[in-house]
Length: 309
Ligand code: AMP
Ligand code: ZN
Ligand code: FE
Ligand code: FE
Image (cartoon, rainbow, N blue to C red; front, side):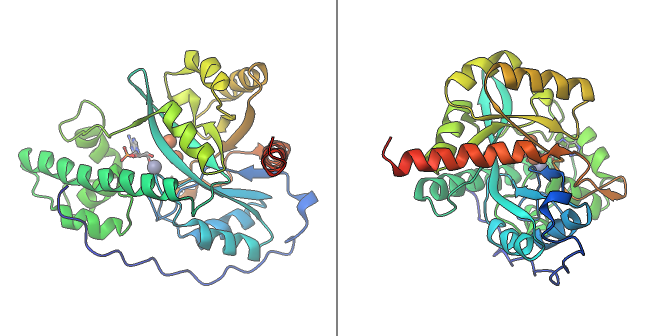
C-alpha cells in the first residue's frame, strides 16, 4: 500500500433546496433515476445538489450509486426527504466475468453492514493505490503530475480515473477530460491501469448479505449478454434496461431479456455532473412502475426473512 491520500475534508452541504410546489404529489411524478454519482466518488454534484436537480426534473424516486462507497447516502436521504422524493441507498461495484468488466448496482444496502463496510474500504484502498500507479505511468510519459494533486482534487475515499483526468486538465497537461482519456487513461493507453475486480457472483453475494438487491448496470456497454441467464439463475435481481448510453432499441432488447429471465427492471442516467452544459440527471426516464416493483420485491424479501423462510 502506498501513502494514503491527504485527510479528506467532507464536502460542505449546499443550502437545503426548497421543495417545489408539487412536493408530495407522488401521483404527478412518473419517473425515477436510480443511477447517480456524487462527489463522494467521481460525480461533481453534492448529494443536496443531486436531490435539487431531481426535484426540478419532477422525479418520484432517486438512488445514489457512487462507485465503491455509500458515504453520500445519509445526506442524500435527508435532502430527498425534504423534497418529497423517495430515496434508495445504493452503490456501484466493479466486477469481472470471464475477463470482461461489468458493474453491479446494489440497492437497499444496509450501510452499517460490517462486511459491506470492510469490503468497500478494501476497494477504496485499491482505488487509492491505483491512482499512484496511474500517476507513475504518466510520469514515465514525461507528464509531471503529482498524486497529491489528484487526491486533493478528488477529496474523497473512492478516487478514480475521472479525477486523474480532471487533474490533468487543471494542471494544463490536457485541454479536456475527453483528451485525458483518449491520450492517457482509457484501455490500451499508456497510463491505463486495470482495476482489481471481484467476480460478478461475489459482487451479487456482497449486495445480498448487506440486505440489498443487485442489478447489472448498463448491460449495453458490457460484453456479457450471454452471461445474463446464468447470473439471473444465480441470484441477480435486476437489469438496468434504461441508461443514458442505451439506444431505444437496446432498451427494448433488455426489457425483453429482463422479462424472459424474471429480472426486475432498473434504470438511470448515470449522471456524473454536467454533460454538454446540462445535468444528465432526469435524462433517462425509468417509469415509476419499475421502481414500485423493485420496492415490492424488497418488501417481500424482508417479510420472508422476518418470517424465517
Ligand atoms: P474507474 O472506475 O476509475 O475505472 O473510472 C471509470 C469512470 O470513468 C466511469 O464511471 C466514467 O465516469 C469515467 N469514464 C470512463 N471512460 C471515460 C471516457 N472515455 N471519458 C470520460 N470519462 C470516462
Ligand atoms: Zn463513474
Ligand atoms: Fe458503470
Ligand atoms: Fe455509474
